[in-house]
Image (cartoon, rainbow, N blue to C red; front, side):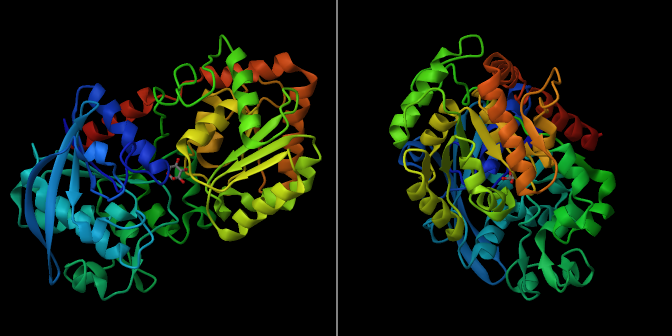
Length: 477
Ligand code: GLC
């Protein structure tokens, strides 16, 4: 089977969030199963020279986007059994950050159009085109649009994955013909129109052959307005072709027995190294070096849907449990400032690392005892899985992928690997943290059993990559 995976970011080349982890690890897992897999993404200025030196220039074309006529280069490299294609246009992709520019709509419309036009320049024509999130949502529409004229794309099947339904790609009506270069009928006929605007996510959901999202629980939740952010009627509409497939993790990269970023490697069978990681982390962050104080970690984008408000509401109550706290992440200024302020209030007990750092995040996953993730909504979430791999016991809200990966140990369940609270309520969260701290102090052996269960759980792509393959196979009949 020939699969083209289309994404706006992929680790290890460029990353802002979980999408990059998935795009960096699912395609190699599919390739390992014997399929031909290629990934295509923009050639951002952020991609390091080290990678750029490994790329081969494949040629260039010009892409017509409505009245625009834009240069478009194609580069490629081979890595982990996959061909990675990079779409080059410096005006669009050499920017300070991957997203957040005034012309993001134009940049990713260009990317989608370029992928269409570059298909003949790639090693093969795909049978499956797998797109992700709003940035690639025009592609399923372009494929349907071109199929009438272009024999070679007619048989292609398209899978679209929603990693987070909050970001929908909403634009004014005039973009249909003036930017996306589509016939107005795509809008007036209802495929792209949602509440008086263009909604690319809606268009992709309608035009794709299969829609997936990143956990079974999130797939069910998307039928409710609380989670679907206005698209619940479209989720209902495409219900038949919608699947929830739980993300896996790059278990080779996230492995405490080989991770070079951490102070000392360790495994479920030999946990001693984790204590070394903890004291190294305490020292590095300026916390009191003390093996017996439970160290609670938050590694997260500091935005509302990650549940930061709950932490803020009962912050002193959390600290009154006698713990140490480290927060790593960036996001909304009000949250960043809050954690900076609290660091001053709790010297040697609280560390606010307002930054993005892969290395420090690994040191925190390794050095902490407990990991807090109280998300309001969480399509899948990877951090809780990484925490468990590193023997750090997660405390999560029962939602989306958190509910599918963390099993409660609260009432002595045999398979419990963490702590769960159901309601989006700060005091429920506080009570649950106190239970975890209670186990840490009161029954260290019991705590280790929970750690070990997390560490030995299967978070690999094995099962999910097979599920995707089954989806592709059934589409191709
Ligand atoms: C988004 C979601 C996150 C998910 C990731 C990868 O970032 O918010 O829950 O794990 O995509 O699918």
